[in-house]
Length: 449
Image (tube, rainbow, N blue to C red):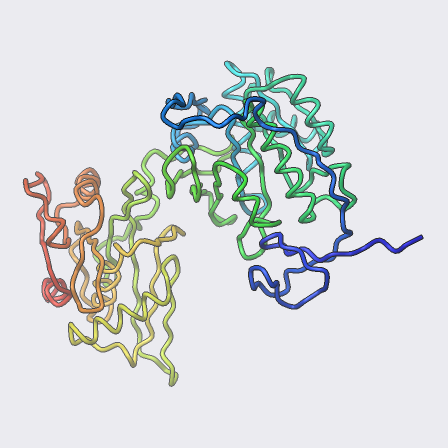
């Protein structure tokens, strides 16, 4: 017998090469090529639409897609208002963070008005039933299938025609058309493509659960993210009770939306006021603490930024940030020295965003600088003050988006003073808060002296 031909597939991009290499020639990632048996190319797909003639775009009827509410408000927020007819959602996250728990809760809510199906490839039917019992869920109308064979899952979906189907998880599903093992690049890509085609053809909304690697990326090829309509990531420390769901891609809604949950004995519970999670409760005023208002999608959040500046006892002072970009911290320290005359080259600087939240927007720059100056001078900021603004290399304080919404959120939580960019100053005064508008970094630092 002839030896089966081997190829090497990249776990990052899905690219293939006949020889093993240390670096993938397609995406330049290192140590991502894995060996697999070359599969025979057989046409396994049918058209999504029977009538695939050329049409004039202006003649195509366009309207809002009907949505299914999941019954979980925070989940609906991240999805953009609910699940879409024929949409495909990919939910990724660390093991044990609550993906299956959230989806089982949502299916039990939707089963009262919708035909739902839960396909479990990792747990037996008994284990899923025990979870539903432990969470005290009404699962009478939830249909359950414990199966990992793709062809069997497709047959059940075609027979029952559910409105919503959950595949938990895509890495456990395998197709008979391929010889590779479940979880391999070829199997994950094939099964996801087949299920996506089925969702578009039948109108069933399919939710795929995906595993993540140690680096936090979805296991399997990145093409998985391009196939689906919505990509959601579960974030949060498994040692903490709080969980965040963030949207990274959404064809039917806004990206960068954030849903906040708390893990309890009865499953994931929605957090209606997430700003309270990210604010520490000190007994009094403490130096090095500054509250900022960040924007996550359509929701303003108040987050406490903490800084600790200490004398360095090594030739190279340390620069460490948690929840903020480390390179941006080094840039801000240079701006502080050059334009405000405050050197930190002989100090260790540590910056932390309270609550485990990750802040990616540049609107945190001014709050980070004021927290550093407060810690360095051992002088606390006023207790009811919020700060936001982007800082440029020339020392200017630039405006951020949705400034008035941020200020209104701060007023709701009882803050009475705000240092903001001059361009964000509202034309009409907002009752209950004093606005201090600044144009440069040195002006903002001078307000503390």
